[in-house]
Length: 122
Image (cartoon, rainbow, N blue to C red):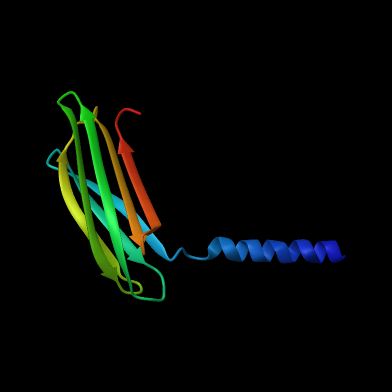
């Protein structure tokens, strides 16, 4: 009986941990427009407090026309529940190109959220 009760409690605790929202969310949103890829880097503060953050974004493309790499970085502040568009950029890319996007968000120099996107040859 005690073992069954312990197993039930462990299941409830584990299920509760699975449903808790992460305090921060980073995502890379993409949309094709006129043969070009529009990229938006987005961050959402799901924590109860306002905080200062920094971010780093890297876009690497390799294709028949060559290789290009661009980076962006910046600082921002987000209030509780606030969604912030960190940056937007547009790249010319063909379906055969290898495109890799990487977004890191930091608070006090420590990573708190990451997003990646890749398309093309793998």
